[in-house]
View: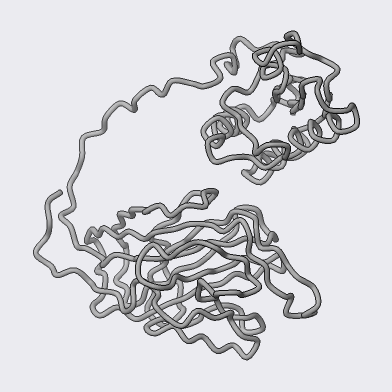
Amino acid sequence: MVWGQDQPIMLTNPSFEGKPAQGGNDGRFNLPGWSNCGAPNETPPDIHPVVGGSFQVAQTPHDGNSYLGMVVRDNNTWETVSQRLESPIVAGKCYDFSIDISRSENYLSPSISDSSLIVHYSVPARLRIWGGNGLCGKVELLGETSVIHHTRWLTYPFKFTPEKTHNYIVLEAYYNTPNSNGNILLDNASPIFPVTCEVEKPQAPEKKEKILGELDRKNLKKGQTIRIEQLYFKADSASITEASYPVLQEIYEFLASNPDVVVEIGGHTNSIPSHDYCDRLSTARAKAISEYLIQEGIPKERLQYKGYGKREPVETNKTDVGRKRNQRVEIKILGFDG
């Protein structure tokens, strides 16, 4: 990397250090260096971790002693923070920036309209970064993450070349699926580093080996069934593990690029539990995959799901290997008229 001559732009309190507290109904937001820019009738962002708090947000800070939690809500509001930069980011110049991001599986908070109602802000959301020329003013979108599914801390790098000069930075939690309750966690923001703008020669993208080689449009037929490999759930549940996201992303990309394809997601189990249990578990797992794809943007009209229980084994249930093969989720091609 070739560095420019300009000095890094240092953020105030980049690690979101403050006294852990739930954003209060009075709108007060006590995080040094940062201002609340959310909806005026909603609570401000939260500072974690709150020991013994009702949130049930359990992540350890990735840097320092606290981090910022921001939510999106099903009433079309979302949380945002902003600060004035010590020097502007200049139009036409190039910059590097990074920030650590996570998501909490649990994020419980009372509804502002009914304190007896506990809302679970668990749907994955994304981070958007804006430049502006006034506190909370969003003028130019500088960067945006993909959907934050993971619950461990990961560093997200950004490169941006603003078209306008900005004196403020705005960090915004935003929807993946509109009108849903979700969260993101932020920690350890870097300085904004000016860098030399380099024109890189385009390189041919590396050909990524597919997990589901059978999921090839030119070879698909109506009624064809494909086993979803490298798909994992927590034991005896429909909770998808992080190791499953590569194959789920592959399925999403296939459906997104083939908008006429209609599929069924079918869940199957082995023969050990009862029929009732197997039916419920296989249906829940098929539904979880369908809901993930809908959340990513696939129209629900193109997705069906069904639990087959233990009625359609592909191997003997008398061996461990056979039982593992029978416990599966499949994609069935229903048609090409989506």
